Structure formats: C-alpha cells, structure tokens
Length: 464
Ligand code: A5A
Image (cartoon, rainbow, N blue to C red; front, top):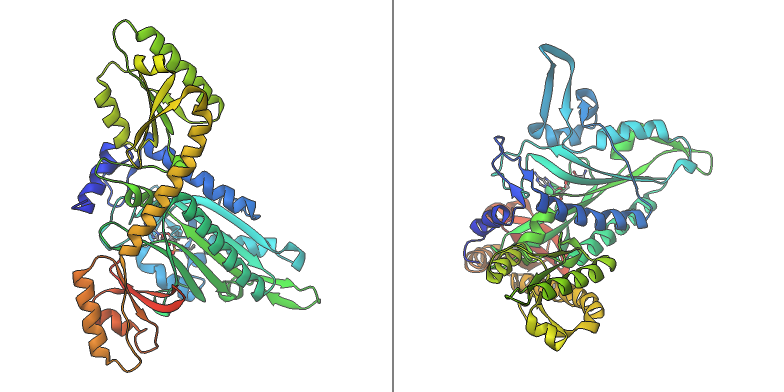
C-alpha cells in the first residue's frame, strides 16, 4: 500500500461502503454494504455489553444549553465543538439547544431522577446514537467526522469508588475482547493529564496503528469519579444510612472501528473482512460451461441451501459475466470465502475453495464442506488477527535511555526515529520525559503510558 490515504478513499467508494459526496463537511452516507458491516460489528459489541449486564437505552439528541454547561471542565473541553440549534422556525429559542457532542449531561440529569438509594445502583446503560462535533482538524470519512453516526456510549453509576474502578476494568476487558474478535491489534494506555476526557478523573485509551504508521484512538474508557455526580447532585442513601454521591464511568466507541476493519485488514486487491462482520461470508460461483450448465447450477443451489441452513450468509453469483470478473468483484468486497463449482469438480465430487485472506485455493470433498467451512472461518479469523498483530509490532520501536541521558539527546533520537520509521516510538517512562513540553520538542503526540513486554513506556507518535 504505497499511499494509504488514496487507497482508503478508493476502497470506500469501489467496495460501496460509504459515500463521501454529501454537501456537508465531515458527514457521509453508509451504503448498504457498509451498513451491513456496521450492523454485524455492532452486534458483537451489543452482545459483549449485554453479557455483562448493560442495557440499551435511547436519549434525545438535543441538550439545553444550561444542562450542557453545568459541569465546568466538561463544557470547557467541548465549547468550541458544539453545534447549536438557535431557532424554531423563524423564532429565536429562549434556551439554545445543543446537538449532543456526547451525552453525559443529558443522561446524568435523568439519573438524578432514577437514583434514590443504594438499591437503585449500579446502573449500567448504553446507547448507539449520532453525535456532533464541530471538528476543526482535517475531517476524514469514518475517522474524523462532524456527525459521528455510530457513537456507542456506555454510562454507569456505582455506590463506591472501588466499584467504579472495577467497572473501568470490566470496560477495558469488553473492549479488548471486542477488538480481539475483529482482529484489530491495540495498545492500551493511560492518557496524559492534559489529554484526558473533559470532566474525567482519568482516561484509558485504545489505539491501533494504521498502515501509514499513524496511531488512531479507537476507544476510550473514563473514570469520572464524583465530578459529574456532585454537579448533577446524584446523591443516594448508602447501605449504612448515610449520604454519598455516586461514582461514575463512561466509555465510547465510534465509526473509527469500521475504518479500522477496513484499514487494518485490507490489501492491494481491496477489502479483507473478518467472517463475523462480512455481509456475505461465502459466495458460490458456478462455472457454467455449455451443456453442463443445468447440473452445475443445481449443485450450486444444493450447496447454497446447505450453507444457509447452517446460518451462514451465502450468495450464488449467477450473473452472465466471466468468472474472472466475478472473482475480482467479490475479492474487492472482501468476501472471506469463495466456493467454485465446475463440471470437473462435480465429476470428482469436490468443490474448490478460495480464501481471501491468504489467497489460497484448494479442493474439499463434498461431504466435508460443512465442517471445513466452520473451521475455515476460525482459521481465517486467527490468521487475520496474527497478521495484523505482526504488522503493528513492526510499527513499534522501543528506544532505551538511561536515567542520565540528557533530554536533548532523547529528543534528538525520538525525532530521528519518527522521521525514519513508521509507527510509534516507546521510550522508558520517567517523569522528565512525560510532559506536554516533549510533544512540542518532538512535534508529535504523547499517547500516554503503557506496559509493553513487562516494562513501562511513554508512547510517542503521530496520530489521526
Ligand atoms: N462519553 C465518552 C465515552 C466520550 O465521548 N469519549 S470520547 O470523546 O473519547 O469519544 C469516544 C470515542 O469516539 C473516541 O475514543 C474516538 O475513538 C471516537 N471519536 C471521537 N471523536 C470522533 C470523531 N470526530 N469522529 C469519529 N470518531 C470520533
């Protein structure tokens, strides 16, 4: 992939995932194929959340100005990014309404009405909604949106700080599992103080690295402590009969996950989709030769029914075009498995299987297809995950400095490596390097502090 940015734009269009031509900057359209990828991805996320006791809710899009501005730090962090509704028809509104940039204030206003005693806790809810941020940095499809169309935000409230701390751990586990399922390698780091979520005590972020070597934040978990609960007066009666404010957490995932599936797994031929999120998991291509057409079609249909019964998303490509064109069409769209059936295969009672991730072709006996497909999906998942992990490893450079290496030398080395190598640079953690100052000196971001191979590092890199 010579030029990732070009490749990415081209793939969104040619694989019919997302249309960028809407006349508002930072807004686009999920096309049917892209929408299905999005839906299957959300299915996984919903399952993981619900398995751990989260329930889905739906809040209004509009937030009155006074509510949004209630928590000082929070509004300070977002004030330059809020879209405002100021009129109803021609009449100016008495209270301006914000298009939610995120929903803490809306949700915590309502939690006040729901929480009275410890028995009302914990609350673990989530919603998948559109949120709006007037981003001033360069917008990019599915990566930096002004209308974030797939904003999954979870919000929890607990009786003790310890419970909230455990909730943060659970959220991290959920996201780890989610990205593992999708084969997206991640680095988990605690964000620096100057880059945490507005209003949070601390933020833990998930980053992956795109093929151009730039890091991208694809999920965040925040411990809000009692910051919001004090402001929103979320007081409850404790088990002991006293009073306390609830302890809160929230965590979010966005369209960037869809962008990551595309960017992390794709190749020169196009998309490569993990089977769980592929809109079509198996495509059957009958090779139709004169005279044998009917029997091949009949066998293809038989196979189609067999796979369908197994719950597999399968299609037959019966179009009247050359097989080569069909192969190209489905490879571009990242269909994980193609099954070819030709007259020769029929004679030998086999089918030919092609897997998109490794581009291997091999034959399987008809009676073994069922088992083969299921185990093949697992092998594909595993291989894609491993391949992506290996690539990310290549994009991580660790530098070793001792306590008394002069700061200028560290800066010089980091700058040199950032210039010569793709990806992020890890430098051994120390207080003197972990500062906003360093960001300026090396002209890159400090993503945070992470554990890597048993050691504590500061992560530096260029980000999206
Ligand atoms: N309420 C909390 C969860 C919250 O809003 N956190 S957040 O601001 O960090 O956003 C959650 C995630 O949304 C981020 O980790 C990032 O992956 C994604 N995100 C943020 N701004 C985005 C944008 N403009 N376009 C696409 N995704 C974005």
